[in-house]
Image (tube, rainbow, N blue to C red; front, top):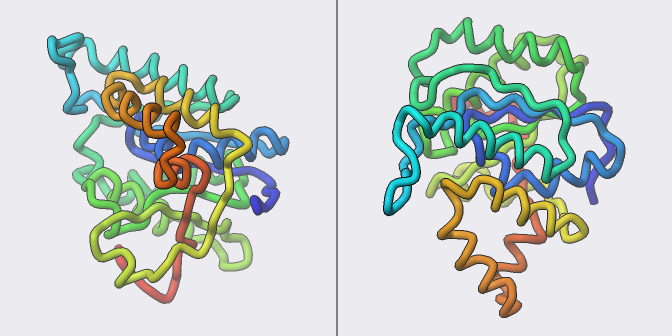
Length: 227
């Protein structure tokens, strides 16, 4: 069951980070009347997929991905999309205090009861981990009684060993089509995957349906420091 929140703040580094494991949750909150803010730190301009034959180059890809991100937000019903203007694959090199302040400013502006991001050290990509560290460090500086809850995504190979099983499960079957639409919005990066996935869904593949209908999160554990 998805718990009603005061305001949800989603912070990820790349367009499409929200699509795979959070878009159903975002759509569900919006349908519940919960305000959701999505802060996307970059435009994913270093994304690997330029098409075969190429449909983009390094100059044109940022604008393509920006439009895809806007379309994805529309698919979820999200109106507060914030593109933060950092550069893809450089988040790990940004000044720590600058990143903490960026997150702090977002928190002060939106007053969230819940933040959704990655789990530091367990989300594979350096930009993912750097974003997660900034979120955790910003929230840690807040008085404990005022801290929002942090739901995180972790998918490193040792995640189960370190964290165990996810402790939050959201059934998003009611907004499954919105999740599919969000993924399809990021066509430059997802088109081949989605062709296969939609075929599997049409065939009622149990694993595909499980992936579509369920989103799992780890609450950040303050007694385990993986920064």
